Length: 282
Image (spheres, rainbow, N blue to C red):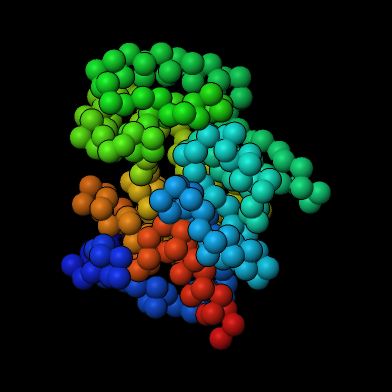
């Protein structure tokens, strides 16, 4: 859904959505079972995981809410997240794979399609991306490319400082013109096979792994994110939240989050968690 954005400014100095967290119906919080969340600049802020975010994740888990990061980050990074943080699993590489966790804390990998097929497609995409990158000397493959199983990531704002935003926009347009499935996050351009995105894998995981019907997904799941590559989630989950730093991207986004925090990144996630937990105790 597309929500109009007001011109009011929060304490972060960023433009806020017309609907603040206080507008969320508390009865919706009572029925909440899952929070799906982007990772970079949604759980993290300025490249680190705030203490407030980690505390919020632990409190949500203790209250029976399952948190599942949905990230464009690499499988290697997501493996660590699934092992080390109080989450129920990770949808990684933009929807290519779900890293689940068994009751005895062993990890399972479930790919969108056959893993070997997706690895072969990744190799072909990498060749095409490397050709395009010769036109953009400021852009480079992400440092974590070696730990990716299905996609290719181009760094424009993670280790590239200052961020090469103009080059990112031009490169993204060139990749799309070539017929590649490319989307921008707050730090990378992610290029992957056609046929899936964050929402399609989230819907599969919620249905196949957790047994939720489409109607139950609409009522029991909240999504929180910060960037244009979260649009497929914002468009389909009525309970959708943007952390404050999403304001810089809203002008180029068709689908906006329904609600918005006043704080950026992981601080905004902690703000959201506090609101939800308070509403559930009321």
